[in-house]
Length: 357
Image (cartoon, helix red, strand yellow):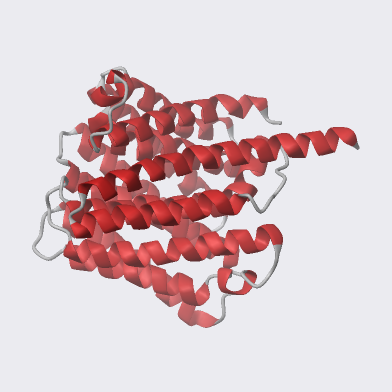
């Protein structure tokens, strides 16, 4: 196991668990006072603190240079600093992380110029703009479009990279570039507050889900068995939530406390992004930690719970039934905790099997 990388995962875990608690506090669930105080930091902790550290670490491992680990270090530290009540310092620390992340992706793109490597650079720029906007005091409605662009484009680029061998013809490449352009353009327009600009970003995200449904390898690998099939099922579930979130965005109002706003944000950032995490974790965790992971059908448990709890949350959002929304939110939190437990036990099982040989 790569023990030198464990501190980064520890920092990511702090932001993840604190972000979950903060999210529950935002929904009015009675929990400890520190979590209630961190409620306004929910999005910051989940995206920059957790995903920034995790994605930054994965990119640093791919890059290999020691300086590339500054991206996950700054991201993780930013989450801890935010929890310490130093929001301004945390915002600039997160901006430093995004700049380092962009530099890593730019270095990788110079090694191998391709549409997906350039898209990863664009994702880094989007994250930089989001964190810089936060540092300069912009409201959440102006920061969110860039955070959406950061996560969706990162995932989109990695799916393009993983499936490029099986992607047929030039149409896939042209479509990929068009989707990336629409998402970046839509994020910029929506952040600027232009009328009806949600339609541009929503159209870009809807086109992304269509591209993935047509060209991604998941439609082939879902016919396999074992871990390969689980990963494909998780990917397809994520593509569904990406499309659903894009459609819900068209119905959402600008109020970040509104139910429909909650629906589209969590369809994208929870339904889509965490389904992708569940799908990629059996591959990324072993690569990052240098250890194996023993697959089991129990992996479907956290995947199914995510879909059910998010559907319950949506029923509460669109039906105006607050208790359903709260129950769905609690289920979302339980899903992530279950995911951590299942994957930790899978690593332990794999180590036991290896030691018995």
